[in-house]
Amino acid sequence: MGKTTVVAGLARVLTDRGRKVLVIDADPASNLALALGIPREQRLKPISEMKELIEERTEAKPGSMGGFFKLNPRVDDLPDQFSVEKDGIRLMVMGTVQKGGGGCVCPENVMLRNLVAHLLLGRNEVVILDMEAGVEHLGRATAKAVNKLIVVVEPGQRSLEVAQKIRQLAGDIGLENIGLVGNKVRGEADREFLLRGMPDLPFLGFIAYDSRVVEADLSGKPPFDDNPDFLLSMESIADRL
Image (cartoon, rainbow, N blue to C red; front, top):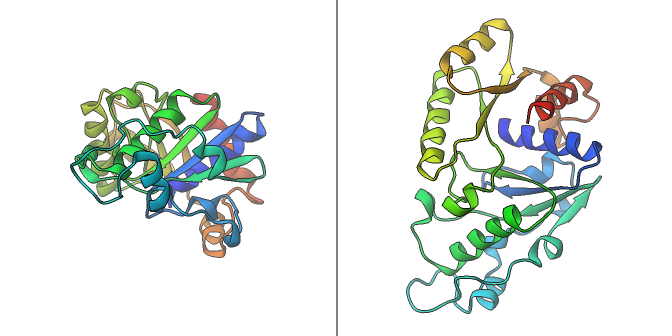
């Protein structure tokens, strides 16, 4: 819930500041539409599951390996065609790719990687990707276009271990510009724990544990609705980006 909450909060703050924002749900386990308050009837099918579209653009059936297919399929029209807008924030649902840096050279993988490259390199707007706990959607070329990789950490050893693993994976593809956000911080002791645990990476800010955010998630509402404290924290984080 933490990183999706941060993505939704950043999108809201940056949109309110007059920026054009496109958010990408690239985590099969998350529900960014819910965090943005998008009604269920407007939910989108992930691009990775659009078999006919993938076959049309790559000229190969999804799930196939080997053979011949386009390595540079057209993707520039997809963000506008397969997205939904809510209160100025545009959402696109990408789906997932092969684990471990994209070892599968298959049509759907090539399609998604080209789409990520277009989003980061070819569009003049703020693009926020809500990814899995890793960098599977990024390659070396697209990593250079990432302004900041934000890793959300919570007070706990397991969370710190995951953050270190993400840092290692990011370094493997040359992505060094990393910032941390501390989430569910209950007080000064939690803040100090996180600072001690990640001493060589900068924190962009801290988000206090807030039962209103939990309740918003339970009720299917955006975390920023009627929560000025949360928005104030996200404003501070946006200022440091």
